[in-house]
Image 1 (cartoon, rainbow, N blue to C red):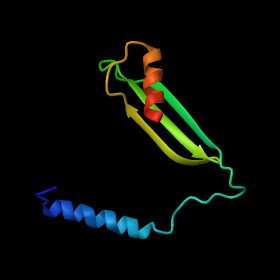
Image 2 (spheres, rainbow, N blue to C red):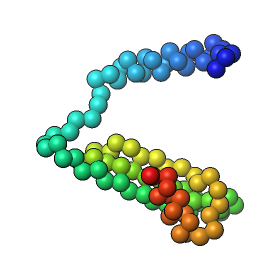
Image 3 (tube, rainbow, N blue to C red):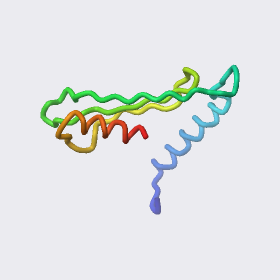
Length: 93
């Protein structure tokens, strides 16, 4: 951060242009004010068997509108599927 180059400033300009163009975009909720938050967590064995790591992910929705989701390769090797489930739930929490 102390030695930014020309490329960094070009990326910052692109980000600011994107944000300026999306100021009118947002989530709209209809109905009563009692929104239901629903969360899902999942894991799946990675297709690359050499690394022996799982893909873990989560998704959260409010009144059937997706508000947050992420899927990532777990940072360490798990010794059991129970441990993978715990990692996925911990990441979601």
